[in-house]
Every structure is written in structure tokens, then in C-alpha cells.
Image (cartoon, rainbow, N blue to C red; front, top):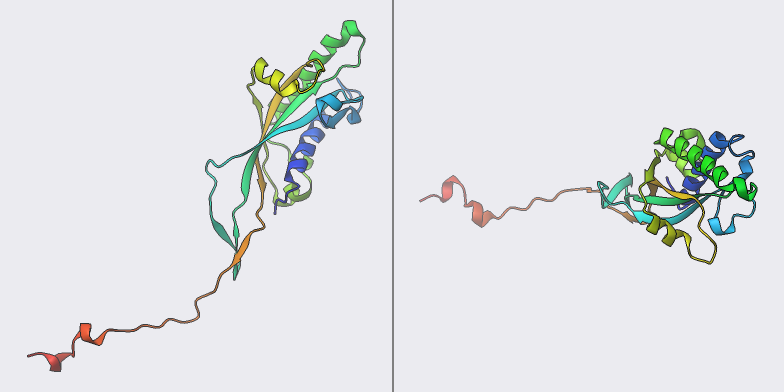
Length: 200
């Protein structure tokens, strides 16, 4: 069962994938890659920030399914999660841009090489469900990036968007159903006639 914790579990899985593949080069320490807003990055060098959740209804079955003999539950909802990945260089000013390009390039390489998050990075309800979380680099215009980024007065930093798909959350809404225990068949004698003896 994928619980409401699926959102943070998906974000954490993405961060753990990046930590394993981007350290010690080009990022020296795992803890410098974090699940947080790019505006509150503190000492982080790469931030992963969930900025949009969108329900995916394409091809998803609706209605209830059988949980047990007498209980049915609404089918899980499936979501697309959009994360903004941003580089924050701590290098001297003259080297800062090049450093950010290296981090972004390495992250793009990793995500392109992993279209599905490896099971080893899943935790909690996603791990129990053996979820198959897909990764897609989403084409995003500069105008869109600036709108996502500029919610305060801080300057824009090198960023890109990654889409996590197939993230499901189970419903807790259930209903009880009664099993058929017997069948009663009634006949209309007038409609059937009176048999052979009733013919003229």
C-alpha cells in the first residue's frame, strides 16, 4: 500500500540517487545534496525542490476494487511530481559559473542514464509496493523557469526540471459489500398458462 508518505519517499529516492552518483565528484559530500527549496539552500550545492503535484488520470482505472471478501476500496490515485533541481556553487566568483555548469551537467547525465529509479533507493510504502518510479527531464522554457524560481528577490541560479511519474497514493475510502446468500425465483402462473389441461 502506497501511503500519503509517497511524495516525500519519491523525493528522497531522487536525492539518494543523486548523492550516490554525484559524490565525491563533482560534489564532495553527500550532505551537500538536499531536498529543500533553492531559496533556503544554506550550504547545499544541489537542491531538489518539489514545486508541482499533478494527478495523472491517463490510463488509470476508476472505481472500487476488491480488498477482502466483504470490503472494496477506491483505486489508487496516480501523480506526476515536478522537481526543480538547482546548482549552488560555493567557488570563488571567477569560478562559480563553471562550477555550476559541471554540477548541472553531471546531474543531467545521471538522470538520463536512470529512466527508472533503482529499487535500492526506494523506502517506506514505495519500497513495500515495489513501485516503478519513472524519471523524465522535462523541456522547460527560460520564462517558465524564471516564474518557478523568482518568488523572492534572489537572483536566478542554473536549474532544470525533472518529472517523477507513476507515484501512487492509495485511498482509505472503503465500502462493505454483502455476498449473495440465496436466490428466490418467482413465476407468474397466469403468464405461463395452465399447462396441457388448460388448452381448448
